[in-house]
Length: 383
Image 1 (cartoon, rainbow, N blue to C red):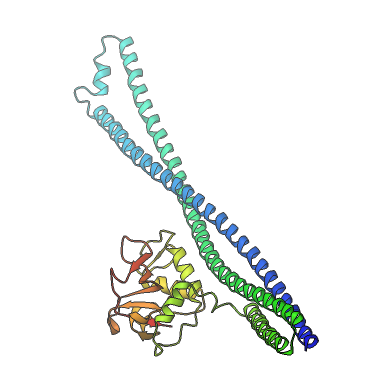
Image 2: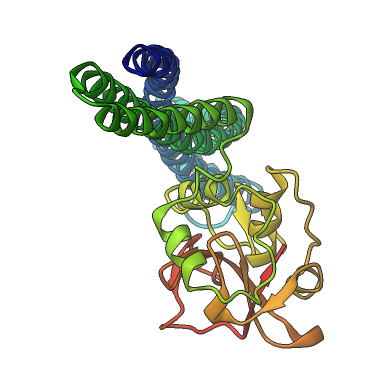
């Protein structure tokens, strides 16, 4: 009995060591990937910050140039009016005109001197006018260049913001995968210890009953090893959707009634990660907006879910029609929340759990978090 038990337990212990090795290796690989993504996020956030500073400087220079152009326009207009007045005075020969100024000279020498003075004044005015027009043209060219540079910087900032959002999703998925692998590793370690302990008990057994009891413990350890092995294989062959659920998701699911519709097929943790990243980008509300330059409520939900293969209609009412209606009390993270009824649905948000949601509120505000207690939705919808 002892030999048979020891052989069985030795096999189970070897299996536990194998599973532990696989789980440890997988966890280390995932940690490496996670560290790489975190490094990319830090690098991207730095570039986003630098891009915002660069855009701010360009817009400031553009505003300054615009003001300088406006000042030059006024100066040119004033100078032109002055030259026109001088020309009219010379033609009309009114009192105080340039011609009378010359005619009233006491001598030929004084007349020549006064003529030179008049000519110098006119020439200086004309030169000043020409210089001002040239400066205006240069500033106009500079403003055009600044506007082009600002537009280019805006596009770069938009691309960086999108990259940061995508990286946030990758980070969330990797963290979920790592947590799942760590769990498999912990189970494998427990199974290994159980098998080792069973082996010791079999070896130390002094009677058949003791050996039988130890063998039963070995079989229990074997079952634990098998369970850990299956979990490890399932985690490596799946998208870790179940394991990637957050604590708030698990709490919401536990609170849901058995009559609630099946959970959304969309990876809610990834959806929430992207939505959360958008709240940090100061994206303004824009009526009809559906891009990083601006969102309205349905444009935001369409944009986020579209990144995960879920095509939503363009309006809140149409999106409501695409979902299975459920009470707000049964909403789970990743579900949609709606305000209004039927064709009168006028607002939509992404539920994140804990009574909070993410939405594009209204004019003058940015994509941000909201609270059910502060503004209660009419119903929830599950995709």
